[in-house]
Length: 433
Image 1: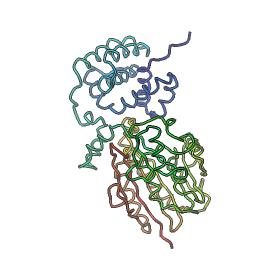
Image 2 (image 1 turned 90 degrees about the vertical axis):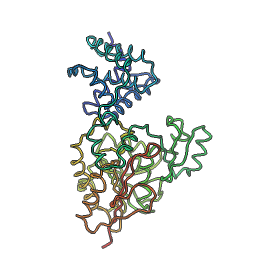
Image 3 (image 1 turned 60 degrees about the horizontal axis):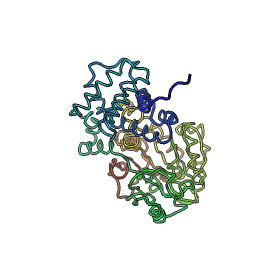
Image 4 (image 1 turned 60 degrees about the vertical axis):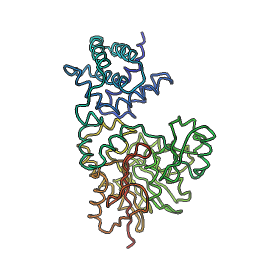
């Protein structure tokens, strides 16, 4: 006999258990979505993202309502109750439906012995309302180490950053300059009844009033626009691209910046895009194909130049390094569960190593743009300061821009709930001999 399909909340509980065990939402959510009818998939996605976003507050409440933790084999039921608490506290779902369907989901997860616990905990939560958060980790719904690190690094801004991380990110587009100018595409959106405004800093950016499925965007399938945050779009304004240049996009997947480079200067000699992940490179090719663009893709560790470099130096290098991703938590709330404080020092070592390796293949007179989607100085301007001490010939360029904060060695954008993500950029030039 075929097994019954799992109800939506049971699927959500399994996804969250997988996140707790180290998988990202982008890894474990897509297989779960395929088990649902198309009309139910956005609901599952909203449950998983919302529960991750408010995980630390919900965890604080649930911990106070349980007399003792559940056994490890029953841990999925802990996550089922978190999903239910998320709905009680942050959704429009009727409370009776949340309670009834959570009990049914508990049975579907083969945990009938825990239905009484689930029912009792959720009825008390409904009756008593949300408790006052016990600490800042619960209040701001972030792990304690992130709260403390932000408080230390950004004493004037830490609460703003935490609040921005919990806001829903806007949907931002990058117009393909080879197809339309921004005003033309804004007119197409208006004709389609989609509210939109130009971004303040990115010259080809458009922010939508409310998100829409990409298939509703005019000419999307034909390469008119891409979805890309405004802060990420700024890389092309710093590279100083010109016809005939050979450009490297190191750590390129999923390819948004590779495509932005090609769109912003149509007569480049070559763009080489490298990524270590064999799984992510096809996504780069898909983006290139949709936009009708060409780049040379290579699967390699960018730092191991002996394994892939042909000996021809690059005029421009974009180095968007692996980082803590603490500037894009609002788009990837599972970062709060996946990242550890112990990750930061090893990441900084990788970042500095990549910077040194890329410097060695940059042409004299060339320019390198270092980028992260982090808000931690340890990964950002402190890396640049360390590099400049070791590479005294490197010249730090102060770009003439109106965005971000001057950190003395690069510019920091903090996440803004109404516009861009958190990002860091530094521009370095290698002098002619």
